[in-house]
Image (cartoon, rainbow, N blue to C red; front, side, top):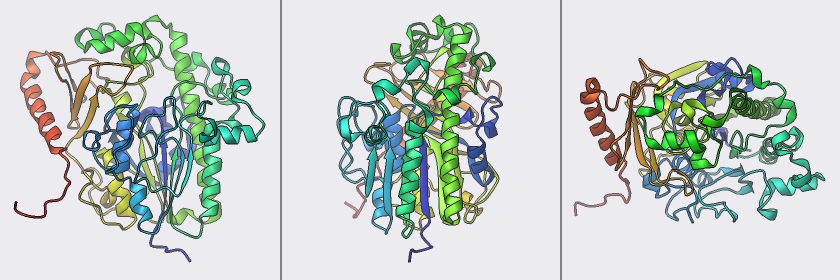
Length: 473
């Protein structure tokens, strides 16, 4: 007999998904009924920000409840994840939980090798698949499954003509494996991390989803002629030479239809995610697990998708890249139909999960629990006075030499490019599209100075709280 006081945790994290990719978040072009349904039955934190605009440092942060710099994991492609860092599943496993991982982890390098799992990961079941493509042999659990279906990645993946059929897609495989895990572990409390690779590039949705989004009907990205003249040089370089220092296409060289094709592909990938999330939620409903399962949905960071002349990700801090969706849903336990306007960080996820599971939050965690808001015991629109984001030369092949930190107080967003004269300052109240950089505007110099001090204070506040103080000297 399982302990009903320990809720199941279904933790769904997509890769590179913007906040504005849900219809319920104001996107009239996209179809996301299942994710919208989660919001209707739960709490959406509408002002949630990642702690790094690229994968590994962001994931290190929300899996530990510590800021990227504190974990020592500030870049993609790192050789190892520090042995003294502890993931949330490890803590849950010490309190009677069975924990599983499906899909991506990306806490250390997976380029040319199988990722090395952290020492304190806590997963009893690991179905690792960094990405759908072949190249990791039998260590890529998705590829093993695909071959068992009589399919070959070389023959059945179509690239520019569309991705592999939906029923053989990695996103579908993630849902299949999730349902199998839940069936197998129905008699015990569990946490399941489902880390879907999409809508990460390459933008290659299955044909049946792509056809739902004709490119000619898609919106053009946010862009204003001349806007890059007052912004950091890295943005001009990406605009002219291609996203992520040339890894992606140059927005300057794409015509309107080509840009719309990227939007179409991206939205189609999100649509497929929504479909598979729906399958998982349907299983929870049909199996009687829904009332005792807390569903969490979010992404690790966003995608520029042509906005401001940028594509992919990197050393940028626009809303498109750092503002992500975050939804909690469990109607029997948490508030419903609540849209919180509180400032929230992904670093807050780890302590929140522990709090929901009734587990004490260790001093080493730097995030702040959201349980009070989720249970209706705290004011829904008050949590933090600011959010903080870091980028420390974080992509080995892109944006070399960019060291930057972002501070956002809910109105003003400041980005300091350390060692450079130019920075960014936006007033999102009067300029929500972030076109007009106020960094050099004389009328904003006092505000800029105050924000630089606040940004510095925030960086100092992220000093590691461990080891614990046990004596006066």
